[in-house]
Length: 380
Image (cartoon, rainbow, N blue to C red; front, side):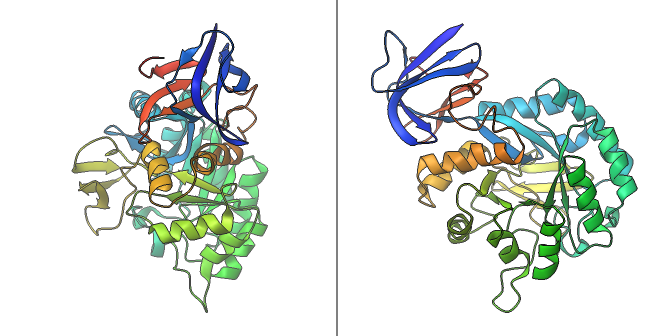
């Protein structure tokens, strides 16, 4: 099967240009400038960017990954796919260990089927003082043996572990996770600057939703934010939903880390794509009002109702970043973190044809995954 998409503004690693691309058997085989040879499927000058890669999401469309139900998880993935997220990691939250293990085992089936790109354990090895939407009663000190049990339950599909480096035993657990091919992410932490550096030296390479659930940046006590931003080995996650982080702080992080070390995420929970109301997030109950999710008892922000297309649009329009750079943050950078950038993350010959077609106002008008239209844009 071969298809040529013509009359498009194609975003590649070299930037944005008017041109075309050909797809055969699910992969990109040719990319050209100007008019396409022969007849193609015209996109009418629309912008084409690589499919979004969300490496931190808890749910959407009323469903929640921490529930560990494969049918619900498939519906969550389908919802986000319609918004342009062609690759998604399922994030769990703090819960009893047996519940985390059961959820990981159930979600591993969907990973093996290619529906999900992996599993993320956000907790239980995080700081009580920065627990956010996690149940403080269920938090634990890091354990190497427990980690082995959780990874066994995930059958090789666990991609990332969020951990607070200041906790007893955390550095050993970080080393073990990295040795097993799991990304160690620092977050939900009260670590001082030096302890954060120790976590990075132990192998941590991601900052879980930078700025959130960690001490503020201080001129006498820089804390984890400065350590995470300044180290070239660390990729920082950012939630651009207008609630979690002020645009000026987003711009600051992007200026320091650049698009190559900045990954847009949603941190979405069940209410994404839904209305206000009450929703579960693991063992916790969340109230959503005016699109903002907060723990019902306490008021802490509890994930978001964000989707990646909205994060893309906001970063262009409100932070002032060029679409080609935002595409890197929404696609290639998280793909690299996940070790998938040889197959996805950019519009490159040889990679899968995971594409998002955006209109003049940056709204999603088409989504293609592996060369198959999920949402076909009008006229194509």
